Amino acid sequence: MAHTFSSFIGILTRRDTFEIAFAPEPVSENFSIRGGGDLALSSNAFIKTSEDLVLALSSAPLLVGREEELDVPTKILFGEQDEILDVKLHGEKFAKLSGAEIKILAGKGHMLPLTQPEECSAFIRNMMNETSI
Image (tube, rainbow, N blue to C red; front, side, top):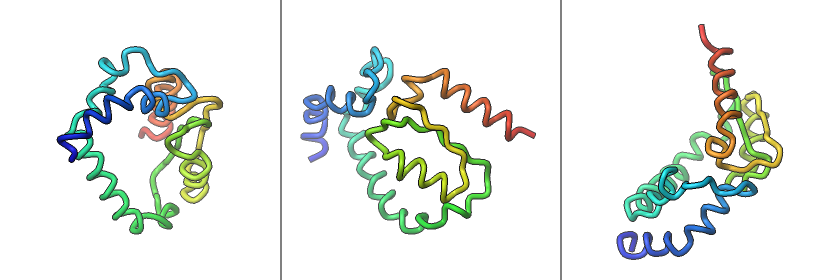
């Protein structure tokens, strides 16, 4: 099924899928080619993503409830209007349970490295400076 239909369906739904991933921000110019978006339309990408989902779901019970065991400096950068991951559940709740510091970008979505590269770079550099020996 993956080798027969996944690329075809991906092509048909590409525009909507990209818009959901970037919402509420516009899809980055040339994301399909320069950003690698079209690579996700291959049958192999569909198979690997499906395998990742199965493994994530099977390993989740081993991890959920252990957030407070994290013993490394942890910070989270999250888009307030992320349509892929819920900011309350995947951002704020995880931060509360793990003790991580969270920074939420107002009016931003899921694809922060592409839509907010300067903010992401500063966030990463700040974390590196705070944790370097």
